Length: 250
Length: 246
Image (tube, rainbow over all chains, first blue to last red; front, side, top):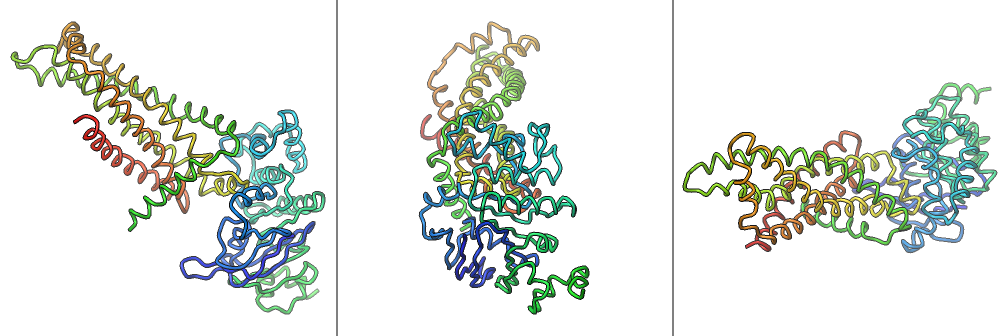
């Protein structure tokens, strides 16, 4: 479980996160939604420690991530997997080497064990064996995202973060990625946090949803509650898409 | 203020670069890759430039020293000392700042803007150490070799061009090469090569590591990196010459 308490963050006097408090539960797909520029990515990067928060607390189970030393933070990062918006695969090495990279860096596995783990992770995200030796630039955007997920779960993390995993993907591939993330979350009992503004993802896998507007927590609930909420800002965000307005009326 | 900010951040980056590696074997693997990528792949251009410059210098010295009062061995001597003292260390470093420096900035800069560096950080890897340290060691290691290769092929260029163009005979040129040779010039230039090697790797790495924005900004950072590296090479050339030669 991850708990965020009274988190504030500003850049050059511009306050991007204002006193955000939220809990992300283990074994569930926790979604952060909001308009572009609402502070979703900043919140995610603060939780990950890529940005230092101005004030507040971030708890990974019983550990306050903000108050621990850099060495302890580094050790904790091995428990964290991250899928970036663009995949962020290392483009000078193959798909297989990308997934093996964290294993090479942090485990004492022998070559055979690493090979088996790589095959296991890539198989879980439905990457065919013939793609193992290809470079990231030689595979499609959807496959790149799946390889990024495989790399993120290679060390069997307790926490999985995804920043807009569906951006730039067609609706069918987006659904595959969403389903994959939910299945992996349940199978490995991870605490998964997904940043998105894709309403399809919310309806598909939004077991817990946090809506952020202008850096403030505006609403929190589940995918079942979201269509019946009375929060005006949330409704403006969701029903900008007429399809969901129609769903609400039905 | 901006200058001091960059100096401070550069040394802060170096602090991270020389931090303890997570896994020595991975850094070593990266080091061998960089020696080939940045060093061995630069040998061809160094050989080519050195042969031509050696030949051109020989012809120019021959014309400049046409006065019968000057001994004929001066052409070989002047070509040798120019190569030993300045061309093969400083000029090759300036050329390598363009080739290797822009390569380092664009590679690390691209990794920054595509979040690959963030990805390393989230894995708990010291990204500055893993990406920059092998490059610095590789370039510092390879630069003295590039210097020796450049001197050898520069002299070879002179040896071939002088007699072919009829500006100086082979015995006269060889005689010049052997006259008043100061071995310390080689030591001095190798010391310069080591310093220049560090600058050619570390300064462009700094510009790449802290780039912000997109592809256009990576290009701008590459240009800035090459310009600043060149200025620093000339500045340190002046300092080292004053300290070690006069």
